[in-house]
Image (cartoon, rainbow, N blue to C red):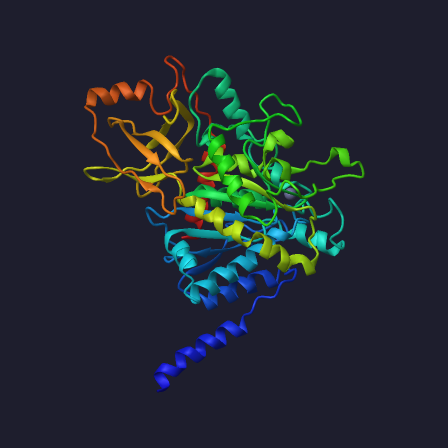
Length: 480
Ligand SMILES: [Zn+2]
């Protein structure tokens, strides 16, 4: 009798003891909330801090959900949400804490959809990237449009990432087809990296993220790359990335599952006393290209796309920046379905493993041509395979030719149809055959690895990427 009674009693006790309260959690409470979730769900969560803390030494905490916490598994895409990058934009921070509780509780209640999501996805939530700004803003009453936006060095973290747009636009102009992992090509920073930026950069370079969203406040819209205009125009220049179709669909997935982000009949946010300057994004489906709204350099969104395999969008979650405490729960209800629908988008397109006779092939290049229409359209943004030879290629429904490539191997192409309404990406594996040694010599000096035009020398300086990688290695060496 006791044996069957006790587990029920314990489960009941734990759930009641850690009920989530909607309020503004301060920097001391934030890790306690994450720890509470971990105690409720020890087998599917892990709490960790990024490699370095904020300027004022506050750790940047992440909670991870996975059925194998701490471990990347092939075929399982990784997703992240980043909240509170601007310290005075606070809704994302509380939504992440609420989402963490919700995922854990629903998992424990055997919610079929949440269980499927967690069994098939590795989800990382960073509630606050800018705890110092949050403190500043909160101490000032939370009402100012700017106080607390920046970090404690008065730097806007969403302008502090390396400007890789400039590199990709320059390559486009020169007809150079190298179009991914461009941090290797950066040789000079416009400004020193802030500790929060550096911590997040290391994070996104070390975890093979597929999909991501950063959360802001001040308007209501899902914003997608590029944020930077090609011409330098400050506003109203649509700056399409090679994955424009996919990014639009990702942004629409959030907007259309939100209570009214995509509603054409809602009012726009007032950004000044002169209403004519305000946008009403509801009238365009709740989504916008970044630079078509206004252009910015050094944003996190474009950095994700141009430095890694991750596709990131930017969510503006409401007109208010410092959301009223009594509105937090209402906002959770308005955002909950959208937060989940967006994570499910990591399961669209194709995924697979690239291997040869002796095992996985890391850093193989996956390139895609959209052959849905009468004219084939190459998507000029390749992605690469990770440590297990695995890749995840987000795509909209349609027909595609997908090619796996690696110097020293014959490229292999396969045609695939991406269906509508996926809950699992289509699996497309590649087995590559090594070329002869003569061909190896040719590929070393020919088109590979990045399809440079003939005769174009590639000059490598010591890049920021190397500097960051080296400093991680230094750190490891001094630790052990
Ligand atoms: Zn913001």
